[in-house]
Length: 78
Image (cartoon, rainbow, N blue to C red):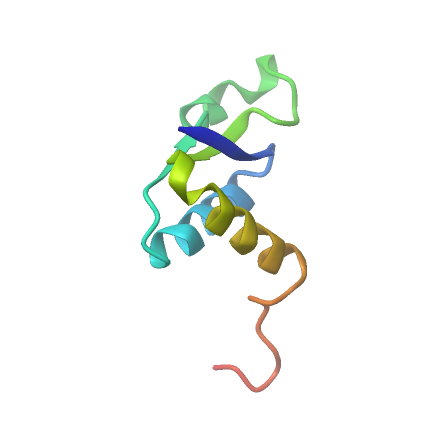
């Protein structure tokens, strides 16, 4: 298993996890259970998305596409 993304934003991490799962990747979101203790933890980087080593390149492509806005909705999308 290899970490491909770290974030402090739970919703963004869940979104990326879902996008990767839709592509057939086996994805693990680690640190999600720590959300309740956020006041005692550093605000950034406590969530980590990990995938199988063989899926690293595809996962990084999905993350890059997300960051470039390829998954954003435009006004014509319902």
